[in-house]
Length: 159
Image (cartoon, rainbow, N blue to C red; front, side, top):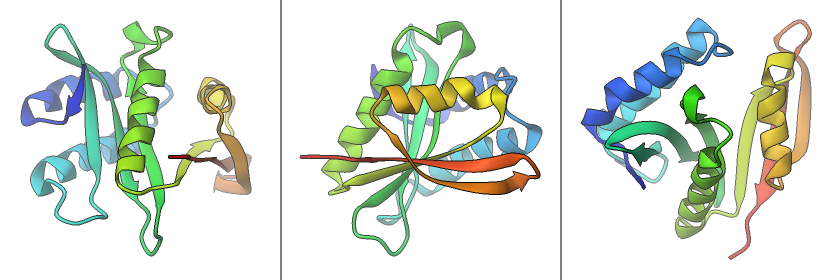
């Protein structure tokens, strides 16, 4: 079941985030900050973060976080899409991605952007986007650090 983030999910999500080896410490901090920001502010405006949980057996085992890009009419960022490592490869990420896209369409969004790293440890992430009809819209060399490029994936949504 996919539903909105609730306070009771925080501990599960922190456990999931901390269990993902490819996330650097600062990425983990940022992910948790977005969860806390969402719990505290509850969509105060159209640009607020929206987090939805994939729940299984009364436990959060994945989530996605989206938000409207400032100064755009219908462009949204997919900030995070995360699945507990013990549940990866079971279609949960795809269900979360489909839910994110439907939510964005409900908000009159038409373009989803997802940013990731060029590092080999993110190869599965890049394949995930490509396998779900996202295309590489841009690549910025040495963005995160030397030899670590920013890759921006995008998908135009249809009603």
